[in-house]
Every structure is written in structure tokens, then in C-alpha cells.
Length: 317
Ligand code: NAD
Image (cartoon, rainbow, N blue to C red; front, side, top):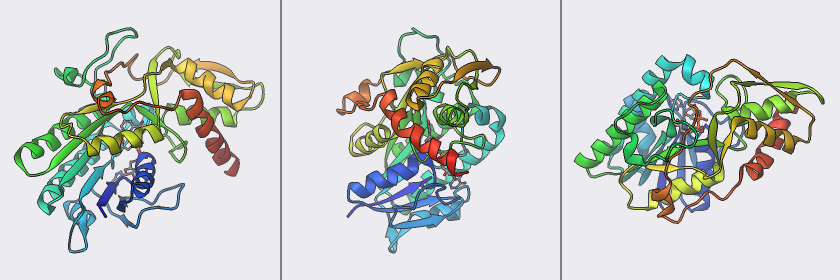
């Protein structure tokens, strides 16, 4: 039985990834600085550890007097656009420390395969209709925010370790991801969760505020598709960074309308000032498609799974 350690297992994607690895027959240890807010851990073992400290990275990876086979590094200090712009120093300090210490501990403990979760935020701002960018076109680099710069540095560091030490590294750049069991309030939630919350809290005939003019273009990837992609990439020979995301690009207004339609409510949108991020992103998925992966869940289907879960959370508080 393969043994995997999922760092960030108390978070949204990490929690779903633990479930995926369990379904695939792995022994799984989850590690996080906090327990999962919404789910009972499915991991065989769960450790509360602050991975900014090297000794905790070593402890996370120590299994039965040896080490694990695979590490999935998803722990990060992160959130939606509001958080990314207001907490630049925390993001750069905390996530960099986690990444610096975790890849080093993985190599020195003898881990054979390491996954790093990067982000489409490594790419520069684009305009709708711009030709899609391939993974290699990330250089010359010009990420729109410091979160993207930290991700790019961490990607390159993990890949440098793979060139110099006996460890295989796989890197995926995630598009915006959404689904149930993710942060939906408090300032770290991302756009799909925030919109679901606002619609769920709105009265019939009420209004919700949406940051910006709603014309920014995005792709939103449902979490089940994303974790399938992570797993497939980890089994593959792809050594360079790989984009994972859906083909379905929509405007923020389209996203809001989809949520409203799924809710069945009569709600009006009011555009207000707020951090919007880039105008558009359009990146190539050819590498992932080469592995036989493609996002299967449409935005409408994914919101139909996500909205009821968030509406229920709203009802419970
Ligand atoms: P999340 O915030 O739900 O999960 C991250 C987890 O890391 C949290 O549970 C957090 O407690 C944990 N963590 C933070 N600091 C830690 C520390 N010092 N020690 C141990 N654990 C710590 O975020 P997510 O959406 O599940 O994202 C997972 C990964 O995917 C992150 O690296 C993120 O940057 C990346 N990513 C996410 C998206 C998205 O749309 N959700 C998009 C691109 C990239």
C-alpha cells in the first residue's frame, strides 16, 4: 500500500484530495495547522503541525520508522482576491517558509515523489480574446500579485531540487477551484463561494454587491475534476509545470447569474468597487489533455453541488 502525506489536508482542496487518495487505496496522513472546519478527516492519521518550521516538516513525513512514498504539498497562506491583496507579507513569508522547508525535508527524508500546488496567478494579466499562454510562456515573468510571485519561486525551487537530488517533482498550476467543503466566509473565500453566500443570504427581491464591473473573464474548475487531475499528473512522467483548468471561460457576471439561477431566487446584482484581480486568463491545457484528462463538470453542474452546501452553512449559523 502506497503511503501519502497531504499537506494542507485541513483545507478545501487538500480535504478532497485525501478522499481521492483513500479511494485509490493509499494510506494517507493529513497535515495542517488547523483541523478541517467542515469534514471529519478521512485520513488514516492527521497531524496538527505548523509547516513553517523545519522540524515539523520532518515530523510530518516520518512514517513507521521511514518515510512516505508521496508528498502532496497544498499548505499555503491563501485566500480570495481581497485576502491576496491585503495580506501580501503574510502570504510571501508564510507560504515561502512552508515550501522552502517542505521540499528540503522531503529530499532528505528520502521521499520519492513530490507534488506542488501552484496557481494560474503565476501568469500576467491578459485581455479577453488574447491567445492562450503555454506553461513555458510564464517567463519572462510578470505575475499580477505577490501570491503569484511566491508560487513561481516555490515551483522553481522544487524543480531545482529535482534536478540535483533523487526526487521526482510534479507541479500543477490550478485555475480557480470551487466546490463544497471550502471556505465560504471570513475574508479568505474565493469568488464562487462568496457569491453563493451572498445569494443564499439575500432576501427574495433583494440585491447583492459584486466587486468590479463583472466583465473579468475566468475559468472555474470543480474540485472533483481538479483532484482527478492532480492524481493523474502524479502518476505521469510530466516533469515540467502543468496547467489544470476548465475550457469553460465565463465572465464574473455569468458566474453570478449561474448562482442566482441555481438558487431559484429573484436577486439583483449591484456592482461596487473592490479588488478584481486580472481582467482575463487563458492558458493552454494541452499538457494535461495529453494525459487524457479533461474537466468534466460544467459550471452549472458544479454550482448545483456547491450552492446547496453553502446555503445550508448559512442556514446553520
Ligand atoms: P485552503 O486555504 O483551503 O487550504 C490551505 C491549507 O493550508 C489550510 O487548511 C491552511 O490551514 C493550511 N496552512 C496554512 N498555513 C499552514 C502552516 N503554516 N502549516 C500547515 N498548514 C498550513 O486553500 P485551497 O483552496 O485548498 O488551496 C490549496 C492549495 O492550492 C494552495 O497551495 C493554494 O495556493 C493552491 N491553489 C488554490 C486555488 C483555488 O482556487 N482554491 C487556485 C490556485 C492554487
